[in-house]
Length: 149
Image 1 (tube, rainbow, N blue to C red):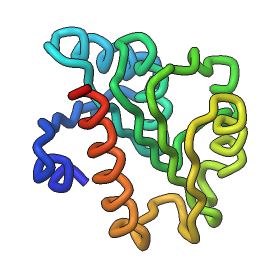
Image 2 (spheres, one colour):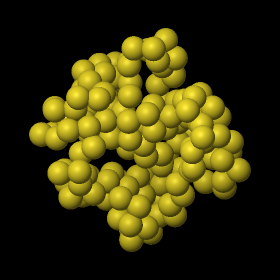
Image 3 (cartoon, one colour):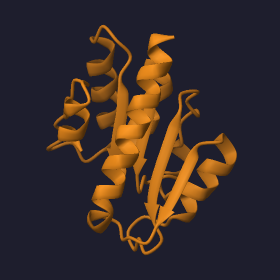
């Protein structure tokens, strides 16, 4: 996915969360990194990384949010669901996800108006990567158009 974004002219940075098991600590690290940047970023995250990206998005004024099987409304984290960001949001989640239930993405989409695409895939979504890359490219193209207006 990073290659797709870079080929489309976007700068890509992957934040290293190794040794940081607490999601809120990850959120603070992402927020701090984003605040030092000159432009509002597009945040991309998968699973707990989706929860982290979503949690940071409204705090840093994200340009967009692209989430894969995000850990939303997961027991133990439900009470720490963040404020819904106002940026365009696209979620891709697999019907056969046995790690993070897709129902949380449906609930989030219905509450926020986020675009949601449910696919015949599992948690890792590796069988769906070509489609996901096309969706990411389209999403970024739309954001680029919004930025230039």
